[in-house]
Length: 362
Image (cartoon, rainbow, N blue to C red; front, top):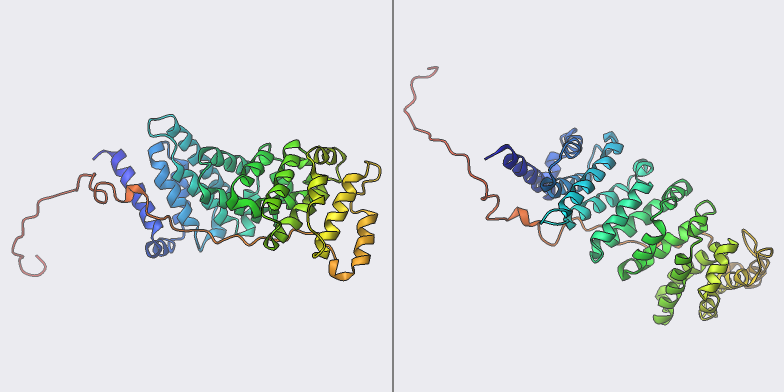
């Protein structure tokens, strides 16, 4: 076959070796394997190869023992290269490939586990990539969940990363999109709360869309009958709303969205901590700009002292434990089985004529 056919087949074999755990464990013993894969991606200009290469990159990130020796900036660049190749596919009759986006997103979530890599990942480029993934595959629940889980992990690493991520022009729309997917409700609220509790990233969410999102959050809780299982979900949402209401413009948007009425509906009598949290949010929304205190209100302090230590407010996000990443697809990609495992490619044949050997050494 042609060079292009052999190249295509080689990329698919690489993907196959990376997909299966035993063969992946073997190729991971090669210290420069992942670096070679990254270089291969960066030098690929053929969109048809993007799916198998994206898959190889993703499965190479799983438990790779030499991750600290990887040039992470080149790895991030390879994600952009794969994204461009997918965009090129979108202009052909084949169309966009969801598997490419799934593998890029899954790769990023996997890399988020390594704190020493976070600085290169917690960027506006990552948010832009996630935003594009949501646009291309809005109904893929695994991709949506991995995006939410990845961002939730990144924002927990510290203010520096929250500021970086919140500076993306896509962050508000993306959080609103994530909340529309029921699988990501809890994680989305955790993410929003992390951003709003941080004074350095909070202002990025002084937005009418976010004010309306808060109304949707509390309406969702009301529809569920304020189930006890939603107490952390509710507490986080109230904390976020309270924090955002410290910004006068945001407070006006929250009031316009009817948040004061939504907070009044929350049953708080059996939950002292939630009661204190709701009370200070309501008081802050009711105060004018001059009365709004940046780091608390007199009423919340009084309420805390009256309720006692057991109602001590949690000034951090109550974490939601994300489900583990799904490393295996429900079935291997189609190209694993097309026409009987690569039989579409011509088999190399040569003629061999057995002959009686001579004496040793001849």
